[in-house]
Length: 110
Length: 144
Image (cartoon, rainbow over all chains, first blue to last red; front, side, top):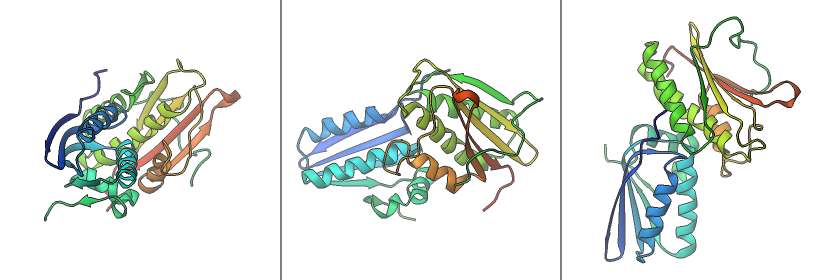
């Protein structure tokens, strides 16, 4: 079997804001990669962390658990989290699980 | 939850449409998704089946990998049967059982999503405590 498709992550930090764009599949095999990228961005002390999910092609409950933990951490440590533009199946799993009502999702216009 | 024993065939007397040993590890969910997607294409099953099939197979495999393994080397065996009106996917784990924690615990969303999306699902304890089979079925006809 092929190894899992890696998650592609781009990070941009400017002033108080860090923005991560993730593309690919978020699951057990790639979650650690995103966790590390988030911790690296947070080490630069932003007040605001934005994760653009629009290029995520697959996500399962591993992603849900990760974002829930991240949101708890944000509340504890006084920074804000935004999950930007989940689409298609990614948006659907937030909705089916009911986590869309708690997590700071910014839905894509239209 | 609909658990316990299934009355549908478990493939006795018929070869599975997919049978694959998957190494227990972080790459296992992606391996399983790839295998069922290949099966779906090979059997010309509808595209609309793909999202639920991908998600649920990912959930059952993730759940298995995250359980504290009593026998870490015990492989996971993924099987699938394509019937006239449904596809049935099963994961046999000879290492341990199927976790049913709360939603926020590791694996807790798995049962929740199975309950929401599968037409039927269940967990069978294998004979003589030799492991667990988690299975689910999805209809082939589009329901909306």
